[in-house]
Image 1 (cartoon, rainbow, N blue to C red):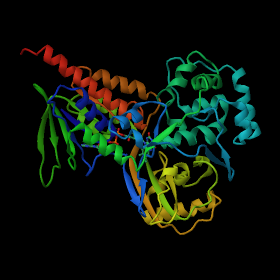
Image 2: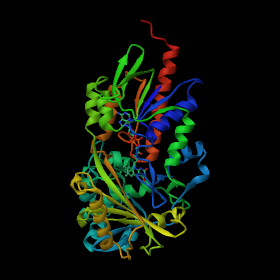
Image 3: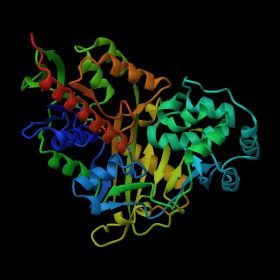
Image 4: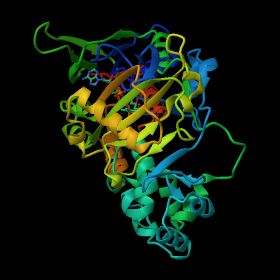
Length: 471
Ligand SMILES: Cc1cc2nc3c(=O)[nH]c(=O)nc-3n(C[C@H](O)[C@H](O)[C@H](O)COP(=O)(O)OP(=O)(O)OC[C@H]3O[C@@H](n4cnc5c(N)ncnc54)[C@H](O)[C@@H]3O)c2cc1C
């Protein structure tokens, strides 16, 4: 069995195969990069472990914490030591009001008290529950269009888009409601008020529990442990260039076309856990229409600048700040890493440090990233001094991580396109798709998709064994 792509989706698939396939089943993970992990990668800056990519995962769904437990990292799960992000509005930091659903203000009093919205903005929000909207039905709309129409453009600009942007680096006007807020979309089928639908999705308040978690020492530890526990043969530095159906399974063309040449690998089943671009290319010989539909998905490019600063910097309260696109800034979010995660207060050679991470880049604004590394780091450092009231010392270390074409942009109609691709491939159950291109970009969703892909190919193989094809 072959898993193409060694991101968290592919590795979760490999481990699921190990855990549920008949004894002796061989699994190979083929990864084009020099190491596995994909968007999960922990690096070092000034001797401090820093996430180059993803930082944490949702704990309100079980997949990531269960996976960490499964691979022996349960005791190393940690949660933020401070809570509450802020948003930069008219030059001031305002606490993001509690009780919102991806920025949709379900708690009107908290929203009013936060000062995030102007008086006019608040009036529009307060009027909404009494003003029936058009039922959503089965259709899909962009989050930005829906929220602007029902609650006014300020809610989009100051709350919804900064929060959505933290996940997708996308513009709310181009992101699908059904794909990015499925529970809310479902609620709107029967509930004409957006605010009431948002309240319903929040459910009953329970005891406070941490929303996010991560692994002490960094997410690369999770990657390494999952790869190890899967007992898969991990082959790195090898791009899969073509995928073809054979009489009894699949043939993959692996390796570069140039020097070194390529080899073929045969497999009884394949999990394709790569982003949409390579997935579309690999599906071309399998089903051209499905390949075309997968290839429609666009991606945003982002970059992260991590700074390790000497001493304990007095930063504003909370975990960080989101900067609305309308502010016209380069930086779209800042995380006060050491303030958010007490456990990362690892000292720099015995001296205390402060770690800050700024993210840059929105979908459609790739030009902002087109400068050399030093210039981009300098521009971010400059901007931080104007965004945050702190004395900024010379950093002990700075690191730029570029993620070109990394975050999928689920445009309206995304779920329909994914369903169409799965329907087109239904006749090939020993081939399964997994990863952020389909059913969610967050780490838990990617893990779930890898596990589901593994389950699909394993049951297809079990069925084949029971009903051998006579030819
Ligand atoms: C900067 C950044 C920050 C993020 N922060 C968070 C966060 O804090 N929390 C969260 O939940 N999510 C976060 N995400 C999203 C999440 O990290 C990703 O959606 C998720 O890790 C994707 O996993 P994946 O396995 O689907 O894909 P990937 O991680 O993209 O893995 C796919 C792998 O396939 C390989 N590959 C591609 N083509 C081929 C080929 N032809 N042959 C062989 N291998 C190939 C790639 O090299 C890659 O390793 C973040 C994403 C980014 C970019």
